[in-house]
Image (cartoon, rainbow, N blue to C red):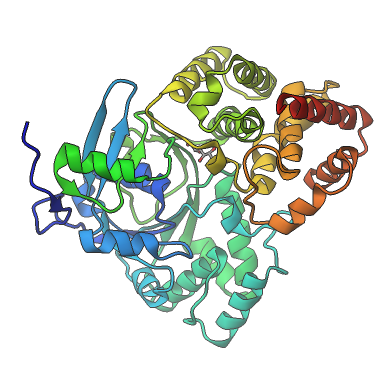
Amino acid sequence: MTSPTPTRLSRASGYGRPAGPVRIVHLGVGNFFRAHQAWYTEHAPDAAEWGIAAFTGRSPAMADALRPQDGLYTLITRGTDADSYEVVSSLTAVHAAAEHDAFLEYLRSPALAIVTLTVTEAGYLRGADGHLDLANAGVTADVEALLGNTTAAVATTPGRIVAGLLARRAAAAGPLAVVSCDNLSHNGEVLTTVVSDFAQQVDPTLAAWIDENVAFGTTMVDRITPATTEEHKASVLAATGAVDAAPVPTEPFSEWVIQGEFPNGRPAWDAAGARIVDDVAPFERRKLALLNGSHSLLAYGATILGHETVADAIGDPRCLAWVEQWWDEACAHIPLPAADLTAYRQALLERYRNPNIRHALAQIASDGSLKIAVRILPTLRAELAEGRVPIGAVRAVAAWVQHLRGLGAPVRDVRGSEVLALAAGTLEDSVAAVLAFLDSDLVGDDRLKAAVLAQALELAELAG
Ligand code: CS2
């Protein structure tokens, strides 16, 4: 068999479609966005009319990798039996976050219709009360910068959005939709709150303009997308002959449920499989609890047993039993028909067992300080309110306690030093400190405290 001649992926060398006009700006050009929203845009029948200008987070690495290949990249869809390769052309431009003037220029364009975000749970900079954390150093610096000059460079997500909206208002460029695609409950509401709080600090008159012109959308997003490795680059080269510095591996499954208005239009994402609904909440609850909740449980618990990937973990009957127990508890509080939930669980098991998706538990373990609250606590609270101590949920919390104390995956957390301090002292001290950190109402519940301690001890024994 002869291999194809290697060619750098670019439009000039014949790959992809012509770039569409920029009508969407995206913040957070990571692998998930490229496997999900950019892919839906690629598959919309009107894709040619919808180009995306994507901005990186703090690291410009993705812009450096994608620019020489005109924003094109290969999506590798790894099924249980076969892989497929597809060049995605929906990124018209890729910028580093520092290219703030370019961001403002897009926002000044009346053609721009949508700003979307995948900035992770940490990007919203919420304080304990759900409002913008005004004590955060990045927020303070950005507020100061915009008070001096509305076009000054800013770095936080709320700061960037507010700067963009100020530029759009000044240019009288009209309405747009701003849509969060992060794994948070009520992500649209969360974004509205932090953006409004930020705007209040720099220009209270912006609130009325936002009310009139900005539609914040709420979405449930789902596609398991591991990090790219050298093996992925090599497989693209071998299968297609393209030299791609940043291919994206993903699974065949994909889901996007969207609630909200798009006052300046949107791609026909629904024709590409997205669902437009009046109320995204039940879908969001189902996904955050069943998928992300079990992911976090495995990320802390199964790594204590020595597993490295989701597929390894779910192949261990002990971990499978933990996941099933957690799902039983969570399902009692998800307002969807039982048959739907059963089918969803079955599909999740198949997705987790896909041996060709090497989804690292250590990657999922990051930022537990934010993820546990969204994924585990709603079920924990709901069960406690009904008089039950849910052992599946308790085990997830106990595994996080042990993770912070050094068992299993290494700790990588935006609130690193704060959460590591919770783990100091005896195990009993750590359990109390972690519960107090998660929710001050939980720490007074002696039955819960005892259950978390018991599960934490059991996990430590399993570690050997
Ligand atoms: C994972 C998610 O890393 C994590 O925390 O739970 O990224 C998960 O893979 C996606 O939400 C799947 O849609």
